[in-house]
Length: 143
Image (tube, rainbow, N blue to C red):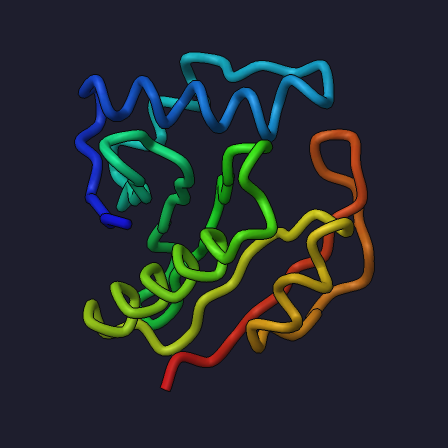
């Protein structure tokens, strides 16, 4: 298992976009627009590789000097529930702490709420709809 920072526009980035699209968009009948993906240029792009194959990814977006947002968390469908998501979140939290952030938050899909709660995230909003499905804003203090 290897964590890697991904450069926007690279071949690894293209694989990352494909994984995000397969896991997060296609099941909803959606796809990414080029405008949506352009935002990734300013973000911290993280991927998890197993034997040279990209299997999970997430993005960290700086929203505030002390707070960072985790977004676009995706683990390949055929290997979910094997601890890779947990490992990737742990690495993203470590990176966030090293960069001086005190809090991490996300817009979590309702179906993933329990997963994030097990990792110490707390719901801090009522349920709302985003990309046509229920979400919660969740956050965690980084100590």
